[in-house]
Length: 140
Picture (spheres, rainbow, N blue to C red):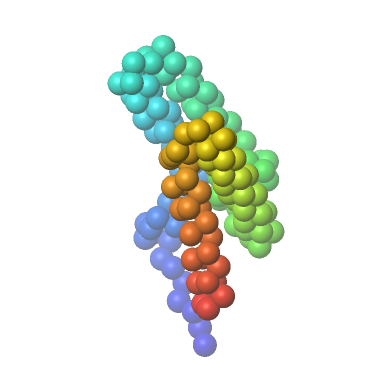
């Protein structure tokens, strides 16, 4: 049985995300959005340094094509090893963020406040984890 090879001329989100320029462009767009949001929010002086940091990060991503770490950050190096590294890094980041949200919720309650919005974020994280666990158990 033969598998059909994708047409290299056809563009899709998956092929675009693997291009060398995609992640740097995304960083520059995020910097521009941050610049606008800070200006609208009354923090115009903080916008240019934030934009400059994201542009520097974009240059770092674009210029570092020989580094395996940079290629993994950009997403243009896809193999089993990098997929596992990215999965582990994402899992650790999600756990740290969820732990911080739960800690902030508890700190809010300890100060006599409602703990919001951290209560909702904690519930969302827990429900997402449970739903994913059940889904993966059945379909994974």
